[in-house]
Length: 378
Image (cartoon, rainbow, N blue to C red; front, side, top):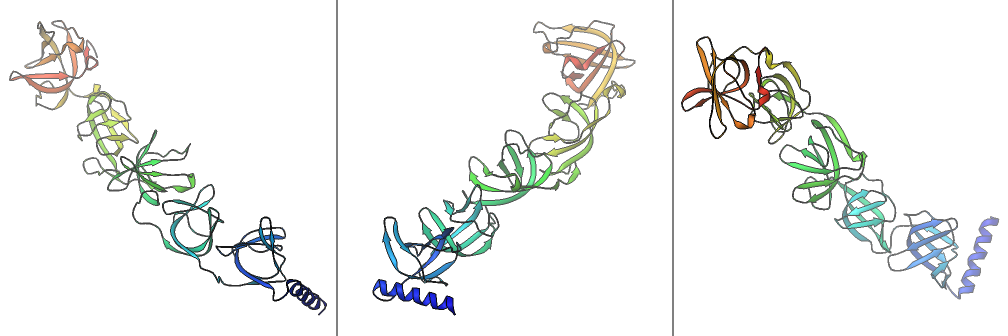
């Protein structure tokens, strides 16, 4: 009773001092610190000398006084209420990242963070104050289903490559991922990534947090002749040539990330990309030294090991040469390009690894490099 009487007397004193009814103001509390709060209705702002809850709409009564910084009130009555003023409407994506923002795709800084999922499309109602938007209420529409420049998007796929830039295969196209510093993904893993879409030369996603990258598993396996882009191709193959990548007899695609010699038999688990294979787990099954002597099994295009005696050698003016390699009743012409840097002599025993071909209609054999020739007991 005593407290009520005191408040009544205070209100009567304020009314008397103002010369009439107390002033009334309805606004959204946008900040509060100690016993000082700030209310706005979108067009006017009022400093209130009491502690209020930011994000709540209040109706306050008291005497509004003009100060150097604006209007202020020491309220005698404070009531929570609904907005009695127009609210701005915005449809945007919620994006908490070193602060809380909306993306339309223009970046809008929020007065406070929301209990919403990152990247979700929201319909919001609120007020502007300065360069910030203060949300009164919002509803979520879920997540974007297609990429839009400057807006969030979530994509799942297989990592095709990593390093200077990361390439993701989503089942239909390659997407470039720009990951946070120190984040590295392993080729062949499946990941779910959320970030901001950018249409550069290719569809790209800018990822600003490690928390926005989730590894969901490993790509599916398939036989090398049936694997699609993003699959782990498996099989046992013979190396037909070795350079920057390995050529295999089981596929037309070069294999990278593994070293072997022509003629070696390898077991591969390799990520299939658009125009190559990347070794995930490869191992040597049989070295080429174990191959049988195929000098009598001439068939153009086939890779083989041949071993025999050098019957004769001819070198032409342009540096190109031929050597007749003979074993019992079988023979083949060994093509000696000048770039091989090899010099053979008659009657020496020679082992060569290469491919059967023809030379002016005659049976021939071609090696890739001088390392594919071995003289003597080897």
